[in-house]
Amino acid sequence: MAGVSTLILFLCAVKDVMPANSLWKPTWPSYKVPVILPQSTVNLDKPQFDAETKLEVVSSCGPECHKRSPLPTYEEVKDYLSYETLYANGSLVETEVGIYIVNSGSEGSQSKSRTKRQIYGYDSRFSIFGKDFLLNYPFSTSVKLSTGCTGTLVAEKHVLTAAHCIHDGKSYVKGAQKLRVGFLKPKLKDGSKGTNITSSTMPEKMKFQWIRVKRTHVPKGWIKGNANDIGMDYDYALLELKKPHKRKFMNIGVSPPTRQLPGGRIHFSGYDNDRPGNLVYRFCDVKDETFDLLYQQCDAQPGASGSGVYVRMWKRQHQKWERKIIGIFSGHQWVDMNGAPQDFNVAVRITPLKYAQICYWIKGNYLDCRDG
Image 1 (cartoon, one colour):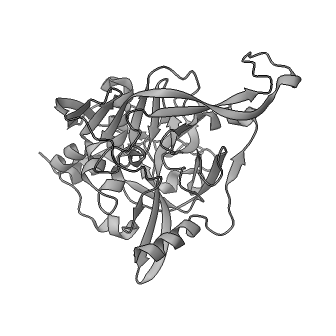
Image 2: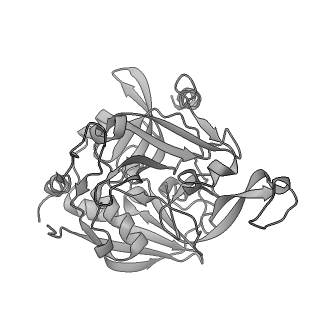
Image 3: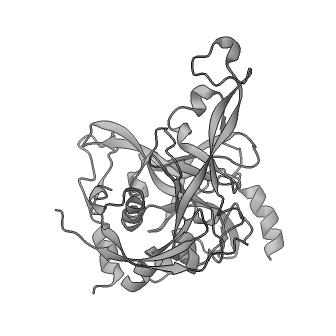
C-alpha cells in the first residue's frame, strides 16, 4: 500500500479552486475527500477521570519544527485517526478505522511571559453584548463547556471542541463523564419564560442553560501523542448532546491554503476566562501554516480553547456566501527560533482526513461526507 505521502498529495488535489470573479469573490474549493470507516471496536476499562483540566496546550515545537517532521506512514495515520468514544455512563470503547480513496470523479519564566504575550500589542478582542448579537448567527454557535473551554455547534446534536478540554493526552479530565454544554439564554428581569416579551421584561443579562453530553469522540493521535510532536495536530474532539439544541449551527469544511482565505484572515469567538460571562470575538491574519496547523497571533486567553475557527467564502453550488469551520483553536506555542523567542497561538486545521472522520462521527454515513 502506498505511503501516506502519496495519500496526502492526492488529498491535496483541488478542483475548481479559483472563481471566475476571483478578485472579489473568494470561493470554497472542492476537495477529494477520503472515506474513513470503523473496522473493529474493543471495550476498554472505565477511565479514572483523574486529570486536571488545562485550558490551553503549550508546545515548544513551532512551524519549522513541524515542517521538518517526517510524514507518518499509512499505518501510523490509521492509528492516529482511530478513536476513543466515552459514554455518559463511563464506558469506553476504542474504534480502529480504515482509510479509503473512493473515485468520485526554563519553564517558570516562560510561563509568566507566555500569559502576557497571548495579547499581541493592542488587545483587538471584542466582547459581544446584547441578545440581538449573542443569540444570532454566527455568535450563537459558540457554547461553553463545563470544563471551562469553548465549543462550536456543528450539527443538531453535536459540538466541536479541542481534545485537551476533556483529555490531557493520558487520562480523561475531572468532569468529563458528567460533561455539560452551556448555551447563553436571556435572563428576564421578572423571571418569566415567555417568548413574547415587552420592553419592561427585556433581558437584564444572559445566563447559561446546560445540556448533558451523551458521548465524546477523541482521536488516538491526541491520546498517543503530546503537544511537542504529533499530539497538537489531533487536538480536536466531537461531543454528542443528549438532546437537540434547536439552534442554527455552522458546517465544517476542509481548510483551504492560507493564500486562498479572504485576506488571509480567520475568525473565532470564545469564552476567554479573563472576561467572565462574556463571549469574545476576534479576527487576525494567519502568519504561517503546516499541513495540520495554522499559526496566528489572534489575541486569546485560556477558555477560548476549542473555539471553531471559521471563514466566509462563496459557495458556488448554492450561489451564496457561507461560513464554515476550518479549524479548532488549540492553544499557545512558545518557539525558540535561532535563540530568539517567538510565540504563536495555534489552530488545528480540518484536513480532508479529519473532515472525513468528523463528518462520519456526525452523520454516521460516509456517503454524506463527500463534499469537503
